[in-house]
Length: 140
Image (tube, rainbow, N blue to C red; front, side):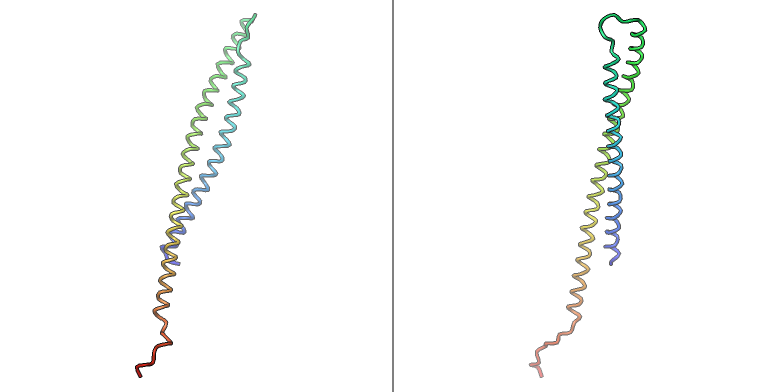
């Protein structure tokens, strides 16, 4: 195995490991995004439930609705920002993984080219080094 071919194979292996690590990160981000989305839906539902209902309400009910409604809306904003961040991170990780897979593919192609050129060189050398047994004997 030539050093150049070995180098390309190692590069391909490194890029494969990078892609696998990025895929694991993407899975983690997806899980986190699912959890956050679920929490957001629950908070949206809670926000609907804490709205003031028409009719007679007490001052205490209005204050608690305002207080808890404000807290819930604050948490909803935090979650919306977190969702945006996670989506950006996921997109970035996907791009990095795609680049690593492309680099792996190119390294494997170069490794194959070097392997083929080595085989061709060996075959050519073998063909030129073998003495010809069936030489015409008309010159005797």
